[in-house]
Amino acid sequence: MSAIFQPRPVYTKIHDEYPPERSATAFDASSMLTGAEPGNHDRNITRTPSPTPEEYNLLHDIKPERTTRQKIITYAVVGVLLAITIVLSVETKNIVHALQPATNWLNSHPLAPLIPISILIVISFPPLFGQELVATFVGATWNLPAACAIVAAGTLIGEIANFFVFKYACSARGAKLEEKNLGFGLLAYVVRTGSFRVILIIRYSAIPPHYSTSAFATVGISFWIFLGAAILSLPKGLVAVFVGYVMQPAVEDNGTVKIVENVVLVLGIVVTIVAYRWIQKRMKDETPAFVHARRKARQSGVGSSHYIDLSQAAGDTGK
Image (cartoon, rainbow, N blue to C red):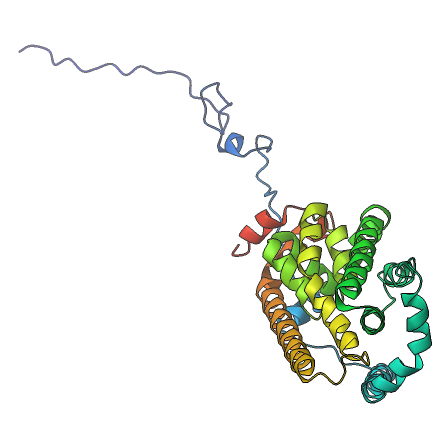
């Protein structure tokens, strides 16, 4: 009977070390992590910071409770402004007739228009105000075309000067204000991410022109875009000129002119209210993206949405 052959097992040395040494062909999953050292599996991802209490209130339209002192100051300011408005409305004709000697003197001097132009330039800077009063006086002094030209020149030069002063002298202060004041920051965000239409509607709204101009200058809006919006919004300021023109003795009893005055006033008020409501809605719609941009700015360490790519941050709102 033939012998049965069995396979002879081959014995070799088994490595006692475990885990085995790293070989050149071994796959290391940690090497696939960008910027991670082999064997270091710590996550380098940080979550977006939560909204601050002020941002939370802004998101949910929660108004902070005002102190008694703040309420008293607000009511006092509103009362004074209302009283001045009533007095001016009732005593307008008497005021115009009392200023008749001054208007006659201004009409007799060729360089007299430089006076209201200079005043309009000076009061274009915040927190000064009174452009409407000056425009009304100019309308009561000169004929309508000349009065419109004077007010337009003073308003436009003042707004341009205001723009350049804030652009080159107050940019750092504007950036700090944008970071600390949520209202100003939201307006700046809407301006920066909006179009020319947004800037023009802001000019027609109830937002004071010098306030909006400071926002336009500090957020980096092009001068030519600002200039175009300022020129196209001049009719809003000329309403007061027409009101003053109607007060002149030569035209105050003209029925047609009075009808035109009423139409102009109603149209100006409607345009202002509609523009302001549109801007309010736009700001409310942009609030979530604005708050998210501020949170992303804190995450990146720059501290303000003024210094980051807001369009990219707004695109990440859903994250």
